[in-house]
Length: 531
Image (cartoon, rainbow, N blue to C red):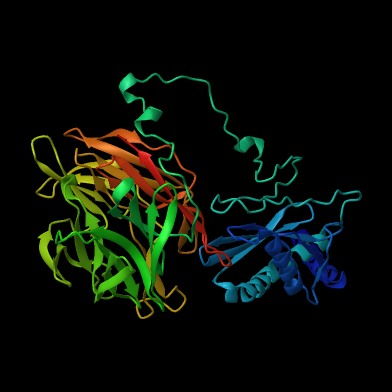
């Protein structure tokens, strides 16, 4: 009997709480100013997103108010833009700071922004009703101090920008800093690790001071290749964006001298240069994807700018100096369905204005034209060096046997293409599969293996963003790759690079500002003396 009475009382309490929630009227909600990361007009978006979300959550059961005082629930939202893709995240907490739930939406382009806000508001409704029940079941404490919602701010690509709410803690939050609870802070212990002098990487082994004045280049560019050496010590750089190829001349300052644009759905994936027939005319190999089909082009440089000498070529191009010797161009084709790289890697042969695939270059099945190179030891024995799909360096002998694999990951690129898999995927799954390409693996004339590492990875959906880079050089000891030098860590994403063997310089294309919904981004060229 007692058990029955207890159950009855419990049911009555639940019923009364529900009735109280209904009779109490609409739940009072305050939307804090949204944090914005990766957008050019941050200040405008902060208040605009706040107003849009506040108006769309309002209804018969939800009352949106401008002040956090006396509310039943608080909403902290953050907006992050990576390229053309954005994500809006929202966290709902009670008036006491207790987390009640979170949700997010994603979109691509300006047209998706307002519908995404509406969708997010719908997703938050059940969480807000939960807050109403909690507020009705517990009377508000008298004299309670309203919760102040901290606003996290940060530069594009730093991963900052998500509001942090720590309940029951009195904390001081500096701009751009999220303060963790004391239990989450790991104090460093005093201690010195002594290493032999030969293991010390000294700053003068890879000069960090740029050898040329850095110039801001409009656009978040994706590729760079060497141009012509000109009289008076001047030289050229060929740079590519997603739909443009530009020629820059470096003298006392960097000047753009020519450009070539593509249109429609075509997208540039890479840029390479070589003089395959040794006629003194530099060819520019542009890898282009158009509607899931390779439609690459070859350009030449003249007094009037760029000239197209071949187009609609079904090849991925990559210029590689095997064993650090003459730079040649290699190619691979695309297959059907999930075969992003089909067939053998072959050397490109130029005859007049015709380009065909020649000799086969033997690479493992998991490698492709973008992920391999070859070096030789002091005895002339050749080895393959591969950057595998997980980012690990592998060294194989001529028979294909794996001799060594790195413990760290390298590479990392934001360049990708998409393939439609609607017939291969359930309706609820993203119909497109994103395939990211990889950074160059370079071998110098003295046998060093150069490979970069982009870090600070931040992912929104399928899109990725890197914020830092370091370039490493390794020498083969006979059993493993041993580090010889590295560049100082740069606070920029490394889009592409090449090694100038004559000058012993590393030429790096870095993105200093990511492309956003309302901004094209910006890049720069950095040249470092490394030997």
